[in-house]
Image (cartoon, rainbow, N blue to C red; front, side, top):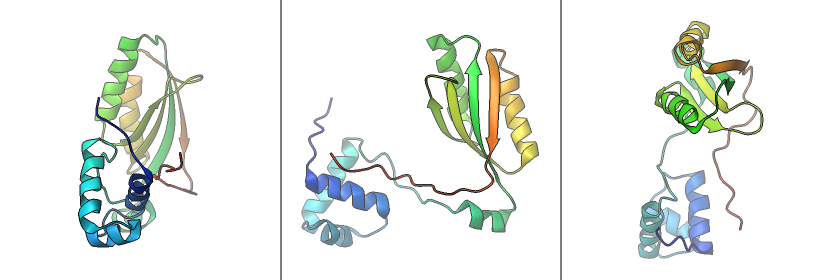
Amino acid sequence: MKDLNIDEADLRLLDLLQNDASRSNQALAEAAFLSPATCLRRVRRLRQLGLIEREVAILSPERLAQALGHGLTALVELTLERQGVEYLDALEQRLVAEPAVQQCYRVSPGPDFVLVVHVTDMPAYLGLSRRLFTADLNVRNVKTYFSTKRGKFEPRLPMSR
């Protein structure tokens, strides 16, 4: 396994990148109190260590809905009849392959999975539900909550030790 020794400067960089990964190396270095060369080297190392998985744009669902029409976000709890590792792995593989599933968590206790799903409308959710849940004979219970308003969405991880 790779050496994951990170220091306060690395934590500062990770925190700054979580807030805005689009800034130039020069601006990032200045904000992190590092030289540009040191900053670039450290960010490359953080990527190589796998601490930075990827850099993405976070879209506004409300604004996107204005352009594309309404969207529907659902939080789904799934409980399986049989919880053997092979059953959990098989369903998880199908769930993560589905583009509408934004987040997939195995949880305990309670349901076996909690999902965050985003689809265009209720007929799209029904199709997804039939394809992923109803067609799987091992899915015992599905409980779905439909979002009426997103109060907060923050992908940042805390950088304190």
